[in-house]
Image (tube, rainbow, N blue to C red; front, top):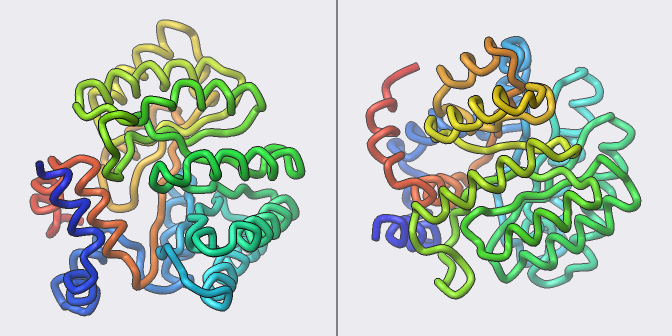
Length: 304
């Protein structure tokens, strides 16, 4: 029930407008969103790099309606890729296809992301094509595959453990050497295509996670669930999987204690750094993904 509630809130435009303008909203976002500007996001990235933590930079926004809006959004990503190269940052970028015009011109979105992949190749970086609702799953996978052929190792995507199709999709991508970020999923999907129960999602996540870390493809295991983290720690120790064969991925501002502990143990950690004024949908989907985060966020709001 809470999950559906937060997903519904993520699309409520009036509440979004109020939240993104309100002092309380800005205060809350400052704890979990790394500022409103590129400069603030890069500063957060540099801070993490000094602690031995990699970063994935995401300019928040989605579902643009015009080519001009798509190219304006894309310009931020090219600025980020330029800065990654110029500053020697241990970072990549994460982009949503609807932010690049996928809703009204898939060809435009692909041309823009192809330009990013080419720029990432020159910068020695990487472009993560984020996953959105199930209506875009196949198109996202297919575009990732096409771009991977042109720039091997520079483009990857995200798979969501709550979708029934994900095991097949994982084998499909791993077979091509395409890097995967595994998450649980944060959109509202019908029961005929997605596991409705959290316990089923968790079981599928564990199975997919173990498959990915024992593959030759470098994957990201995106979770704050300490039970899952501990399960993977035990699994790799028992199987003799190198700690450098994969990386844990976490969100900016959440479980920094866990991030540092994993780094100290020799695991790779990458923190997803969202930034920008359009933070509200992102924030609500994080609550939807794991409603227990509501108490966590309230508990940690005043902590640094």
